[in-house]
Length: 384
Image (cartoon, rainbow, N blue to C red; front, side):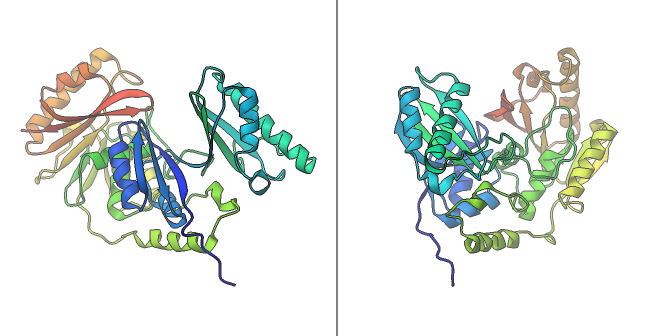
């Protein structure tokens, strides 16, 4: 018997992404089929059908996570929250006692201002309901739950959602090793998109670390769908449609272009062990023939003759580097660029505006972004 597709089923979906990537995130989700998009700080809400829901999980590069909104309700204290949660959805369908669960809480209100106790109220509401129905209750599993419940509070309103994955979607699975201050993969992908780099231009990271910028750029150029090797919590949800999921998976697989000719994508790293990590990450990602890693100081890096795009995430003294030493480093880096990269575009992630002044170049564009909670700027320079 052929499966029945709920293709007309409308899902309210929330994408959580790095702050500063809302505009490119809006474009990404729209191109993948999401409708009625609305952005707020670090969030994009939209409506999707089931096929689009699956497509986003295979192909979207920028979100940390997706939340499927199940119910919105008023709650002005623990008691009203308790009963609102019990009536939020058909829990007999979604959470029988054989399944484990986890509760996460964001936001707050005057009466519900402690996330731990709020999460405990949600948990108690659910296990008490289970006891009344089955005389059994689910276990809480913080690491690998079957259902990950998310409650967001704002004033006297609550939104209960199911997270579609137990861990962050920024993890692609190719990084066995990272540097001391790693750049998250989804942020790197978003910054590449903000730079408007395309695969007709050479891309160079002279301070490449574990190679995240290069890996994300090559993945975009090759059409690598980031969600193909990942499992999702919704694969056990009661409305999961295996055949439709498989169709979207097949479409995502067809996007991969292993033989497409790419421009030079080059990274330079002075630390041998970190350079080896970058090479290992590239190998794990299946991009050996797409990215070249050179070991040595950026001053010894000979750039290709035709101008392209430089991207980098140099230290800015928050996690790595002494400020006095970094002033000299930025000054020397600026001199190297002016002497060796005339005609190139530079995109630099900076979390300390004082340091970027030592480059000795005028910034033409800047985008505010958050990098692991650090307020940063994605700076664009035309090198003359």
